[in-house]
Amino acid sequence: MTTLPISCTKYIAGLVAAVLLFGCAQPGKLTGGDKDETPPRILGSSPQNGAVNFDGTSIRMEFDEYVDISGAAKALVVTPPFDQAPMFTLHNKEVTIEWEGELLDSTTYVFNFGEGIADVNERNPLDSNIFVFSTGSYIDSFEVHGRVVNAFTLQPVKDVTVMLYNKNIDSLPLTSLPRYFAKTDEQGKYDIGYLAAGKYKVFALETGNNGYTFDLPIERIAYRNELITAVSPIDTIAEDVDDLLLFLHADSIQFLQEKKQMLDKGLQFVFNLPVDEYTIEELNGKDMTPWLELWNAGRDSVTYWFPEADDYDSLDLSIAYDAKLDTVRFFQPSKFAKPDKKKKDEGFKLKAKGGKIKYFQALELTTEMPLGHVDLSSGLLIEGEDSLELAALTKMTDLGMIVTYEWKQGQTYKIFLADSALCSNYGQCNDTLRMTLKATSKEDYGELTVHHDLPDLGHGYVWQLLNKDGKALREQEITSNASVNFLHIPIGKYQMRLVFDGNANGKWDPGDYKMKIFPEQVIFYEQDLEIKPNWVEEIEWKVEP
Image (cartoon, rainbow, N blue to C red; front, side):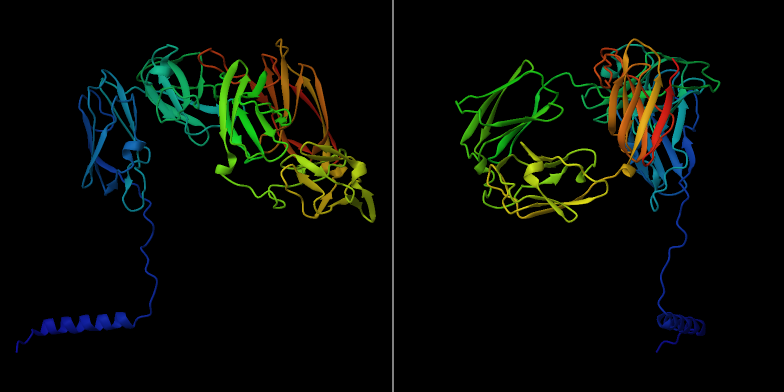
């Protein structure tokens, strides 16, 4: 038998005791200590940050901890840009960035890593994400600052690429990569530094394909005619640029955007632009006369409702609109879905427009499809203890009814319709309907009067009152010294906007870069308006030329 040394025996006994003590201890929550919020740091690099007269093809950086570069290539922004994206490699705590091709002479290069290099555990991004070197004898230091805003709302736009070109050629954003560029932040702000001396053309582009050329119709663009002049290549001088107004080119090509079958009940066509001239014909000789034709308010969508359900084999339609001609074919709707024409309330709804009764106007009740059978003989409008015959107060429309009555402010009303009082052309009928609606009162509204003193620029303006969502609640075309007055404005906070209507078409028009047309100017009243209950808000709005 082998005898252990006394020292070993004591060590084992102590270890066993420690294990037993740990096993008997009360269980507790394990913690990893305080969260690591320290970003990785560059201990050394080749070349050094800020180096001059550099002519290499790579950057090597050594970090104080292990880093993750999985997002580095996507986040990297290099100005001036390379023809091909640089490659990242990682070995232990060392990152190497390599590129192909020769560098430009006497040029300052800026590498912005964004948050593409971060520590492994907590994803803390690099503490200094800018790396700069020059192939010349000094680092360029001119800076440009500014903001990109929506041309119509004047709200800042983030993630827009602001680009500088060192040439003044109209085709630049269509065909060429920029010399310098930067992305806007949440406030629409951008900063472009380390610019060489020279004159620069400025564009902003909301790219649809992560590129740097204006080549998609869905891309918004901003530009300015005036060039930026960068002076003194060594002394740091900054220029603040006026807001760049971002806009989407107006569609100028009319086309049929969408066609839709409403099962066996009708058809719908949606166009890219409002339609002026329009004719339609069924090429197989089907009589379209009984079809109900309904256009939307913007006249860019038309719906045809059949007089009854029609499970046609096929339809071939010729549509002529605004000097264009399309042929459209629809196949038998039952091949896709067979509706149950006898089921009640399937797609049949009766809704109050706005969800309430405005005491100063008739009540509009709408359905989702045309009415065929109507029997209001048992219909009632109930006001307190009084009941009135609904038929005497009602005018039927293609898609519902209008109830005209002298509503009492704040009064609750009930509308009663018996089972199957209303049926669509396609067999859907209402169940017994009991609708409760409350009329508004004067205290729900205010009045607004605005007197204008605007520059007389040879054109008019479009005045708009905007709700909190930026939607125009009221609008009116006005002259430079006109006044507007509106009643029954729901209480709440609003903004006022003026559109400089240069082409007198009664609406705001975006720009067209190729035609060298800027978006029409808009201005907002300097502060929000508050419409108070049963109160007249009167404002003088003066705009200096």
